[in-house]
Image (cartoon, rainbow, N blue to C red; front, side):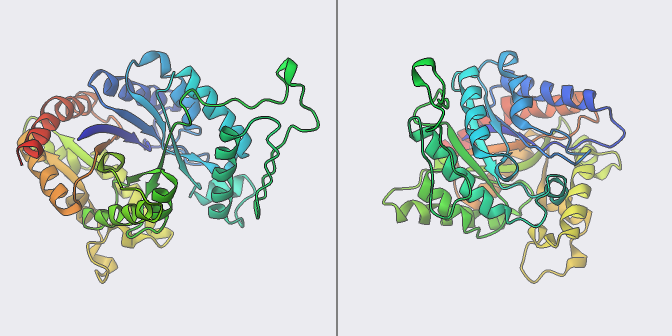
Length: 366
């Protein structure tokens, strides 16, 4: 099982933007040094807490500060930009990173982003579907492209203005052939979108704020999509994100991992529960469909979604979670604000050097 990193990320409102951006950079640099396989970084335009506005731009600052880790948008919000721009920017990034690039995609779910862009009443899911079709066509076709897909608002051509002898009218292709790995974050239980991922050879990343008992439904649907196109689903293509804190002692794990009022894990899930409750998605945190809303308290969410403890405890919790979800190819460690940089870095170190070797040894032995 591989180890990955994911950060939305979330920072308290009082912190300086420049400071949090640098902290997020240092977290990815540390992940690279510790041997993490990839790092997914999220983006929002209008959220001061989740304050990276363009994940690709942020990740570009890390190409020459890292050596091995794959740099992944987590995600690029396809409904907010013309697909020609996304295809071209992603292709250039892939060359700059010499293949250390993963394109994470989603429609973009923050309504205030949509409003700021004049898209509040648009069907962003439909825009997303049309955009990814055009991005793939740009990478597959040659100039002048002449992309005019049925029921697709995006038309792409350089037919009238091309001058190929001078390089005019050409859209760049990625460094990786035929394209970079494409990953979609999956939030909802039994998501039908995962079936489409399987059919199109996109890879699922199950969100860290979904109860583990529902996560297995993603694999079932992904496998169904693969089967529909005559292919077999590979466990190595499935990523599962979890919120994890590893400490040298249980008291620290409990306190920093959620009990203390200043815990970054408490801050993170207070943000998540509040936001999801407002938009009617509180059921994501439930452990049963008929669980009353009033039971979904912040402490309940922290108790059920944060894997915390010493190395031995975290190993046991990950293995128990894997028994519930089924096998998967990568566990993705969710990054938090560094309220205590020493504890935050130590957790990542213990996760990479102590937890993962024991988890993999236990899986291998079994």
